[in-house]
Amino acid sequence: MYGSLAEADIYFDDNDLSETWDTFSDTQKIKALNLATKQIDRFPLHGEKYDDTQDNEFPRLYYNDGYKYYWNNNKDTGIIEVPENIKEATYIQAKFLLEYKDSNRIKAQKEGVTSLSVGSTSESYNLTKLGVIQNLNRASYNIITRYLLRFV
Image (tube, rainbow, N blue to C red; front, side):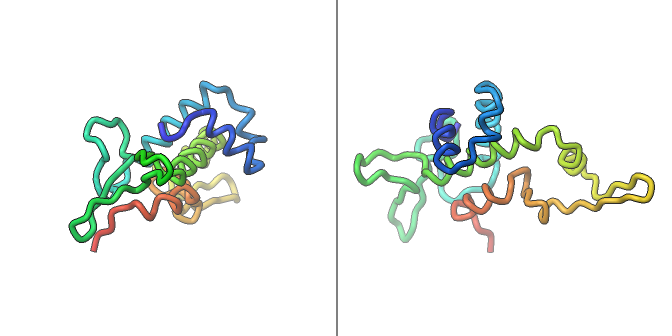
């Protein structure tokens, strides 16, 4: 997983977002963090894994004009790390998964339902407007866009 449970807890505390995050068990949080990591890794990403044997897609390296670059080379330690904003996207996505996993609306949308009518009431769904892009919430997606492979 990108980051750790302890880092996620600190992130939500520091950003005054821990109220709902703290209602979930550590087991639920870890499962959500692992799933969020997998969801981020499913996107087509620029560059390649830093090490072919690593489980996840980050840390990554890329080439520009024949030079090798790393997405996050800690200038203080020289250690190649997972970028902090990838960790942040993971935390935000994990919280989204926990908060909305039981939502009937989200479940219906994932199953391809575009509208629903009950009596005189009806709803239409547009996942892009809802803020879900390939199962990733819009906030997390916006964070990872700089790492996405661009097609011309």
